[in-house]
Length: 370
Image 1: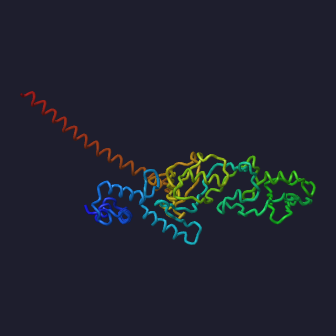
Image 2 (image 1 turned 30 degrees about the horizontal axis):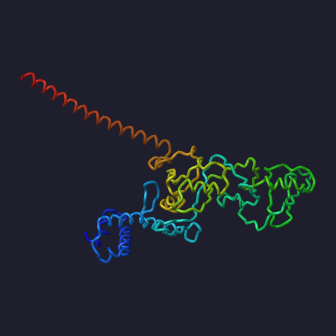
Image 3 (image 1 turned 90 degrees about the vertical axis):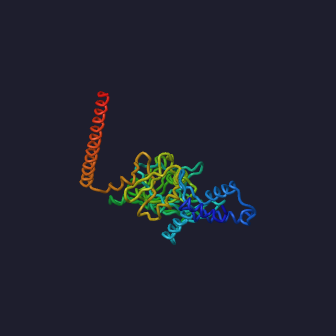
């Protein structure tokens, strides 16, 4: 078989991958003088080697024993970036050693039902109060991030004198000695005001600064630092297409200093139709997001507890949003159809049994007359 016809033959056999494989094989042929310049007919082993190399370089893994052609993935990626044109959710891609790598931000929605434990000590370094260490991005409506230009000094926290009006005794005014010193805002739900001096002792100020943090304006103590993100709020992590589901989970938990083990959580692809599919450990979340399309009105990636969520298949999801009377009518129709099929089978095998019995009787009479 002539070498020039080989890419076309491969394209017919592999269907959707023909274009990508043909171009890759042609590039391989141009790079090999003995094949491109007609210096002898290529052996069967050489063609096998070229074909195997072409398949490896033109396919991108998207799960265990699941692959997608590089051209098809790039087509999905183009549509994805057009949808997010001008936004920071656009993805970039590059090739390293003929391997296509896509990287960028992935939106992950919080779907937790139980509180999570927040780590307030990072190794041996104490976490400072500025919200940059516990920010949940704009999706969770937490305090915005701001860099700390220099070590913060201990804030001088003062409480205004309480008046006779009972409502005024619940309000406090916090003053700091420097403009860039982090402020610790109090809420009415936090603690009550005690009548005391205008200035706290340095020890009390250090204790407050070390132990009190705020999320959404509510204070909690790091010794009992538990928090439940609002259901459906969004955050994001920067990942690439080679990172598996456990790696993305670990990255997300480390980003927010969550002490809960990653084994408690899973990532789910949730559709508006009600379909809910768990991403396997061998899946690549960024690839899955690209293949499901960019529109989060159709599908979202959720972080959920493993023991709190049950997967919903596409077939089941079609009936989830129907009212109970409609579902009951479906069940009645299915039961009627089942009864008809049962009657049909019974009549069929009854007639077969009659024929078999009649044949046996005929054979018995034949043997008796012989």
